[in-house]
Length: 252
Image 1 (cartoon, rainbow, N blue to C red):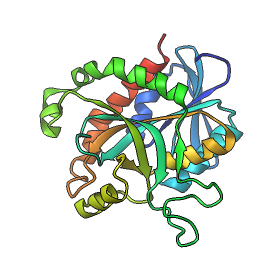
Image 2 (cartoon, rainbow, N blue to C red; image 1 turned 90 degrees about the vertical axis):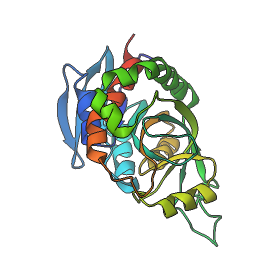
Image 3 (tube, rainbow, N blue to C red; image 1 turned 180 degrees about the vertical axis):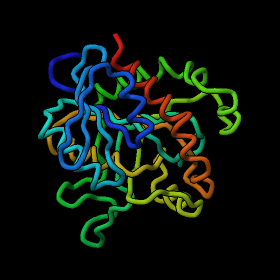
């Protein structure tokens, strides 16, 4: 995977970015487009780390800047998501193979979920980069709980995390109602999890021909309890999972 072309490491939220920056010994900040990009090295790779911004527009802007301004050749995105499919539980990890915008609806001009001008609703993750990230995640799964305290494990009812691979859906809503979650499951029964940025990154990466891989830790079940202790989950669970998986991907 190693060459001179920089690789982007994108995090959705501050706690996750901080855990990634802690792995970089020599990062320096560049501000472009109102965003702080951290340029440096990780285990000998040239990397650019950044917050995606929340929502699809912010994510698309960040993706475009990474490609056009910083010249990244690959993008790895780590974050959290709400679980949708049966068996996708809090503390599990979802590796995206496909992306779809669940709130894209230009009907009756186009089929629901289809992106106008593309003739498709789904965009693909890069197979090779996603395979590499999946192997890294698989190596780390059995160690992830050991990075957490007993109180954290008990608070969130965490079990040994499992890796799921498949469809990740995105929209400009934080899904935090059981009725909405159930509606998404009915409309998109293949969807494993829901978040707010992945499909935007996938569309931009498709436009520019840049490989993308996305991994998400499940923070909630996208239901009426989705907001409970969300900041604590980010701080104590998701940030540690993110740093472990990113380090496993880059470490020789």
